[in-house]
Amino acid sequence: MPRVDRLEARSPGRTSSTPGRGERLRLAVGEYGIVIVIIALGAFCGLTAPRFLLMENIVTIFKQISVVAIMAIGMFMVILVGGIDLSVGSSALLSAVVTMFLANHGYLPAPIAIVVGLAGAVAVGVINGLLVEIAGISPIIVTLGTMIAARGLAQTILWIDNAWLWVRGPIFTFVAEKGVLHVPSLILLTVVLYLLSALVLRKTSFGRYLYAIGGNARASALSGVPVARLKAGAYAVSGLCAGIGGLILAARLSAVSPEVGNNIQFDVILAVVLGGASLSGGEGRIEKSFFGALIAGMILNYLTIKGIPGPYQTAVNGFLLLAAVVVDRLTRGRTP
Image (cartoon, rainbow, N blue to C red; front, side):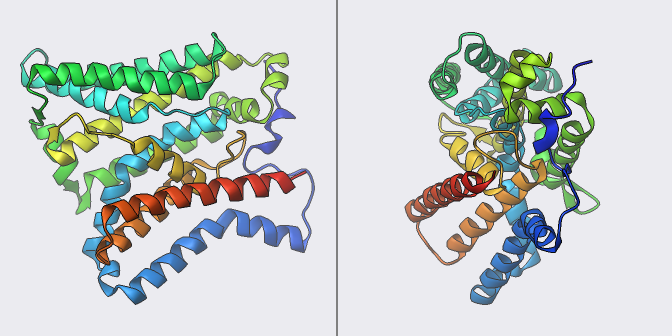
């Protein structure tokens, strides 16, 4: 069994010595700072736009961020090992198109069509991982290429149906509109996926190795960790999460068009970075990616209530991403 004790030093929950009072305060701010930000942001938005704190609007925010939050699970794992995945939006479209094409034309029952659609998205992730790790190509170049290729393939299938596919079936209606015990299905699904991913990252060797690889890939390899295989696995998970997000997005829109998932990769990266994951790899907490998606969703919802046009909202997203990256660079730069 490979030894990764030293390599896991940057994993959550590990400390080398008993911290002093100042260190405990710093750690507490790092641990709960994002929750404080959410509370402060909610208070500000509620005071300046009372409609913001209505229960109906709060539920709407959680439903709106569900797709980005789910896709952020896979993106977090890719960033954790020092990679990036620009193809998630196209993987989402491909998953939705393949599923609806097979189900609508009666080629496969809806549940099996969903599996095939998700398999297509996972295949994109596997290709990303293999090209990055085996061919040694930059993840930005690889995922940019698969982003274009997967979207082109999906749009080709769409043109068979005149560039439009309706979403039909009770399973999609349940996910988009129904709930359990008055809790929307989208919110329940998001929570369950985060609980599972947190369990995997904290309690399995797969999760511990991802942190180790992000901290020091070379040392991990020398310790016997199958670095290439695990990195490819992270990209495959990213593809799976993108596929799930694409199906949810299609169900919410009740249709699949060529623009589904377009540029959503930037919202997903924003959620992960706002959640405190290091772009250098090896650091971060998966649940904070959800909080990052929530912060971005709260801001955009507030701007919508205030009547701010869409292009300005896009600009705000861009500035948020830039600010988060700068803060990440400055903060990690001071870390010994």
